[in-house]
Image (cartoon, rainbow, N blue to C red; front, side, top):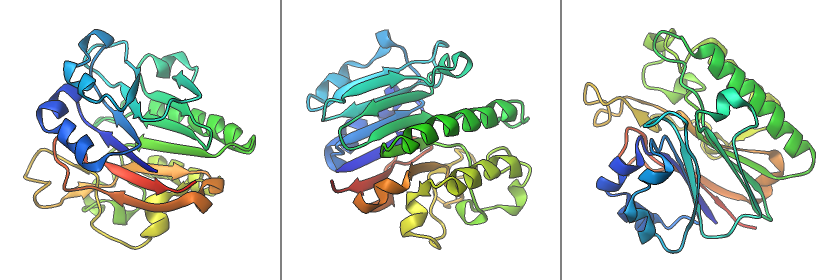
Length: 255
């Protein structure tokens, strides 16, 4: 089973830039999208060209902002939109799909902003999510968390760590929350398979020709509970896929 996650930075723009060809080429069983930037009435007609998938959505209240979508070939047992916390849920950041083998969280984590104005909000989101997923895992469920975490964990995860010490996305207090997830038993799947592999990024600025020069950040993840590890076969990044300032990431599972 292949699960892919991608911050598309606007689904309608991604469709114009080859999204349907991407789906046809990589054929994920489940596809999690973040930052779809649309409302129910704005879902593109082209989505109906994906007849093998069922689509589930969590829209932000504010138009043209945030939002997540999950496309799946298998019908979920249960779907949930949001964490049950109003100040996060109005921004359309979380979509949960439950399958017989696992529970999948598709998440667009908050951005702390250049002026650090939303760092506190972001860290509170990390904290509340961790409480929720820990409870589900401790109840015996296999849990997968994927999406745009908006934080590079270690210096290996961005091209220029020294010059970004005070940049949101690499602040010590943000990175400490990734440490906390790992300390609580969550596994960064890409680093599980590639602990020392450098220059592997998932986001590049549109400025300064950054993507062509591979001046990027690894801020998109799959994290899994330890009881998923026996079924985890691979974790990968797809930098060759264009159409957004992020590229897709994925995992392979065998149940």
